[in-house]
Length: 343
Length: 281
Image (cartoon, rainbow over all chains, first blue to last red; front, top):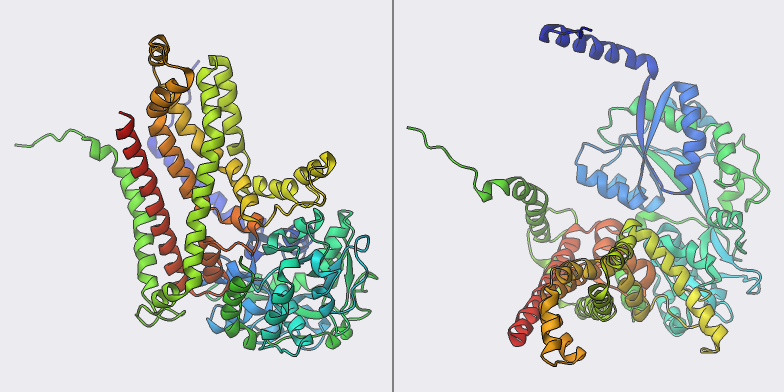
């Protein structure tokens, strides 16, 4: 038996040929890829199930996701100084304003999106495109508590002794506290009345938790009422948790989740294809279905009955906030919250 | 003429030393550098953040609470862990392997999973409260989550392997004839424990306590998930400043404060260990 022998020259030639074939073969496989930052959990799972295949079949682009919360995306992009670790951001309004302030986004060209005409007015601007809405209100356990009516009920008995709270670290926490403050005479830029009121009932509050632990705390019965968004309520309901969403009398809060092209990204072209796929009617419709429970932004999508509005235009009546005013105050609010609630 | 250099010990340590310099020393210097800026955008040099941070009485409360948490966790793990080590010492080789496996077992699951499991255990409708209510030991569910003692209970379990591994390794090298000699000379079991076993196992105990202290004071996930916002420790301040409000100079100040506090705590434990060893001998 003889062994096939390669000379070094043959080996190098073969290696070069293989590498060459791989290099040529590659574009035939996919037109490219785009790396997108993605919220971990529900978002990542939903995008893996619906956006990845849709983007592949429509544009032959591979979507790679980096699971990061909004605040982490800003911190990473800022630390990377012009060499972003991903091509596309997905952000809540607060971090979005920070991103604009610190020059982390490329200018946005709405005309590069085919589906842009299907979005309600104001969903695209110079910095990015809205891909989903979030509606914030009160979630409570109807088996344990009577139905609350307003934000102020959260600080009254019997609700307050079963209340689960988070601070200003998240968008939904911040807007909820602003709304509570408003009921006591505060405003978007003045949450002082909230601190005055919460101090009176602080010892009764059932839980003041880390945002990520709130669903677990609710599920475990540590608290039976909390401010939250419709998506979390729907997800918990899907796990047979007794929870119902209530729109407070003064109105539920709406805010939008937007996507942006990272400054210095080399995959801008594919990023636009990715955004266009996300806002397309079939994908938006799929994202709305359980267990994803997104609130769509495409007019062609027939809204599910469980959503807190009959049409997207109703969202105009929801309470909105100006994050360019909130952001500069947030650091002081967080500090204040630490001091007021810490034992 | 060429001199042939034989590889010395320091050359073998070089890869680790370089990695240490690149991934610890340089970031540490950067941290110190960033802390010496006044503004969030890192443009103006100054010590305003240091002044602001250290002049705030709340900061000092947080520092004391953080060190206290470490101290309580060390005390609880040592109190619970040392008897386990004694059982290990007295067990045969087969049981020693079983004990070692049980000790290492928690390390095989992620700290996040272990922490969330503690929500289920300590919660209002959790295992402990259900048991207390069923036994009639408490009229209403106790508040265990988001309290310091609840957090210490959880950290005791989470950090236990860090105490036991160095302790068991020292114990397993202990000469059993020393204890036999002590018994033969008429010492009671208790006296043998205090005068022979404890002093001999002290290096392992001290090493374990230092690890537990450093790990529990910096255990951000466990502190935040189990302690919630009611218990504020330095890691929470660092997270808020670096990732929520992007005030990196202040985050660096808090991080360096944590580093110094933990360093002082660990040094203190080492000093206590040295003193008690001198006393024992």
